[in-house]
Image (cartoon, rainbow, N blue to C red):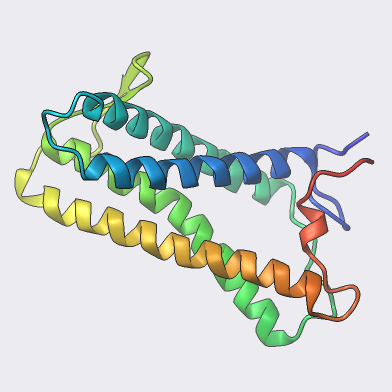
Length: 186
């Protein structure tokens, strides 16, 4: 049976589920966001895509908060001793950056909607209270920030994946960290 909590040799079920589900949602949001940003206001799918993007972005923010609280409660396994000091520092820096971006990206998206004077709806079930007052002069700044944060996150994800693959395929035995986040049979 799989542990729900993290342990010395790997991540628990909750960490793995949040990790992979959030990775999937992030890439779906990037693809949909890129596509919808190029649509004209009169394109039929535009409103639906914006609504779904906002709802999934809000879900992503809630999952990020849960994930950050969970990692404080159930500490991740330590990095392997085979890794050099600079690799450990880089890994911790990339992970910390990803956690900050998990929060900053959705908040910048909420800012765009709020600056337009629009609330963020959660799949039509309810609307989140506005965090920011309507301010049309800030819309372009928020859009730029949102886009820059997404690109930075893609760079951080690239480093994260590249590091995991490097440790798995090119480093000394025992440096592999990828197996700790993959589904396991035990």
